[in-house]
Image (cartoon, rainbow, N blue to C red; front, side, top):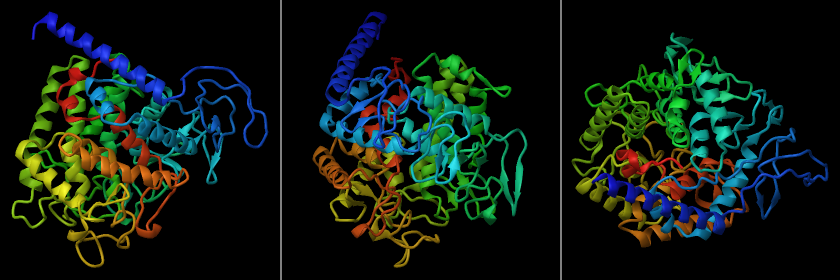
Length: 519
């Protein structure tokens, strides 16, 4: 393509993006504006001046757990669209549906926000800035905050504050032994950070020094090392990336800290897949953290694949050609090995990709969907996998219930007592057979091109369920409400919303960084 046609194409993309952005902003959102206003909350107590208020049908800035009157409300980012793919994505998603989802997400994010000095569940926020928790939990989870940020409803200031917190709590250059063989490797990223600033590197506890005898792994979860890169990637797309990536935090640039975090998870060097053993076990993905897995891990490897592409993009923006080659080679190696390692070669798993090659290698619904979403499988393999997914969606409850997804297809449960081969969680509860809305955006995204009617049917079930919940956003659900857990879990709505609004990590965007123009 010559220079003239390239500039013409980019101008057309920019014009279309602006038009769609204006339409969406006018049709879906209340105006984003800065005002100073005194108001009364439901208790009738007057508060001080506030800025960046978002006015909605439920009133102004009704935020629980807030004691400081000068805090900004969770506000919608008016720089709504970042790529041509976004325009296509928006055109396939009814604006009234996005409006409904946006309002619910805004509401639940307010319940997740803890102002400086405020208390939540008996814990005080001493971080010096407002903290955004997942909802229902007393700490900031790295993964969940990043998912919340991907929705576009969390301000850039909040994103930078949390990124700085995560990287200042990154482990230093030496391993830390917690006991019972549990080790925090050099430069590991915490699983979550308490509201007093203490980093906790393993799930299942708020105690920074607890080893839990390796119940949640002997090494920290893999995906947290990559989620901080995803967060940085999103932030870098909306400013001069060099300024952000070259910023120093305790003697190391942000880019250097990300590079070191990327190398923390243990891998198979031949395939570049995440691999874990019983003796050095690490959780691969937090939404599987109560499931005992060994061997090569599908979801963790797919997240590593996506992150390698994001790192290549970051390296390119700062002119580091050697790192671009390095990360691209990793992504290509992972992509090459997904089907050979995790594919259903003998037909015993109904066409699904398996979750692991060791213990708990059940057919993986989330992983199979995510593999298509990030472009790790293509052509005939993609068609076969889509066929498996669509067939399962025709069977009531097999993988989907009320627009939520199970981890393992019911027909392929490990036993009558458990969906997975090894877990302490009772069957049909939490990660062992309950249904989750968190991955719904991925599913709708991959169904839309070839199965638009099915995508719409599933989406309607999801939206109808949400409309009947009086504002509750469950972490997971089940039949007759028996598996319903945590009624204010933000990632259940923010991650799907981010996918529907932005197609945040569509394969084409990842493989073609030029589709990430800056606003």
